[in-house]
Length: 408
Image 1: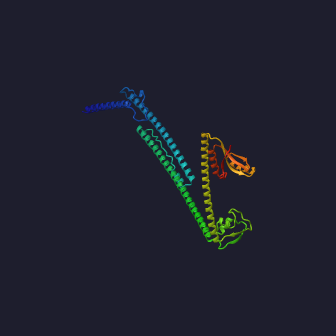
Image 2: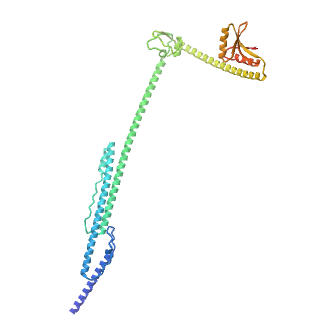
Image 3: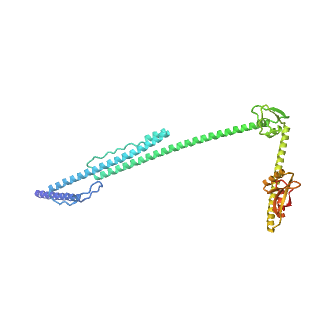
């Protein structure tokens, strides 16, 4: 009975040890064939991936297990080395982002100091980003999943630092824009205030000018010409315009009352007559009537000049037509137009020069009754008659006694 129990116990221990040994060998084989899942673990070499021969030798298995542990320790050390390198690069990127944020913050504080905004400078100084510190993990026994979580956390911290730096930069830019906007608003308000002040000053100046003009007009209205003519002795600095304003008399009336031109210079000690109110009115009426008469005379002269010009033009046209008619009919004989009969040759020469200056061909001929002044000759009597009409209507020669005579 005791022998059977011991036999059964020994058989069970042998079977259990065999099962455990087989399970360990099977696990070692599967670990050799399994690929690494972590991104930071290097791929096994061809020699590592090759299948190791199965053995039941316990010493051989121990040696194999020791080699696998060394290889795993090497892989873990490599992973830690790469994790440390990644953390170093992360710290460098964070330091670069921090330097950039500090430079932008310093630029903003400089701009704010230039505009004199102390409150914004203080706020910008308070918003300086503090340097984040990263504590690398030194646990040599961290697994691949732990390293990956550390890498993800470091990446998230870097992104958060960049996001915070961008937010700080946006806030600084917004504060700078608000500062510029406020300065522009102050400048516009100051410009508007100056424009209003200038407008008010101009309005006040204009009001003062109007008031002065009204006072001058009222003062001039109070002045009236004297009721009776008075004598005035010219003093230094006096003139017709000054005296006319002083006695409220038109300059033309004052000059007419003293038989002089409005532009005549006065002499010191000269006596002038200041016309009375009735004289001023009478002289103004006479001046108006004289001006009207001069205007009517001018109009009449213009009408006569126009009429004379028309007559001269018509006479010249008739003369041209008569000359053409004579040329076509080939009239015989030459005729002249006698315009004057002078007493002597000197008088005849003087008249001849007058007609020559008006554009006529003139000759003189001595007769028993005097010296004839003849314009021409013209071929044919028709042309001579037309020339006579032209001479009689020409205002330059001012004659109406021209008549035609036979030349030869």
